[in-house]
Amino acid sequence: MKKFFSFMLGVVVGGILGGTLALLLAPTKGNELRTRIQDYVDNLVAEAQVAAAQRRTELENELARLRKQS
Image (cartoon, rainbow, N blue to C red; front, side, top):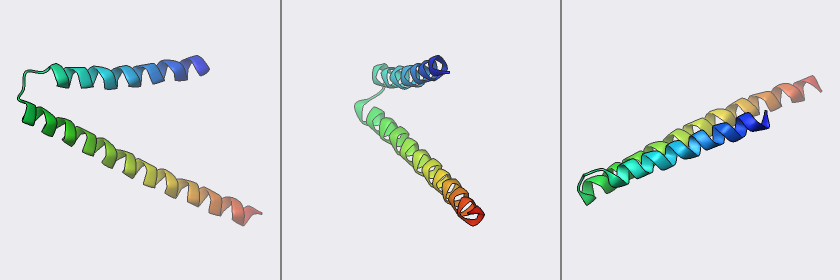
């Protein structure tokens, strides 16, 4: 199981690095590239915030359920 998670971490890190290099080496103007990178980062942050909020809600519901059982 540990090997699987290590592999998945490598896939994610490789994807991020590959995507970043592709953006940096793409033949676009500097301003356009910076805008694209900023939009990408903003989308990532927004998705992470949504995922964190959903997970928090799930954990709070689970905690409430467990407290009722006690």
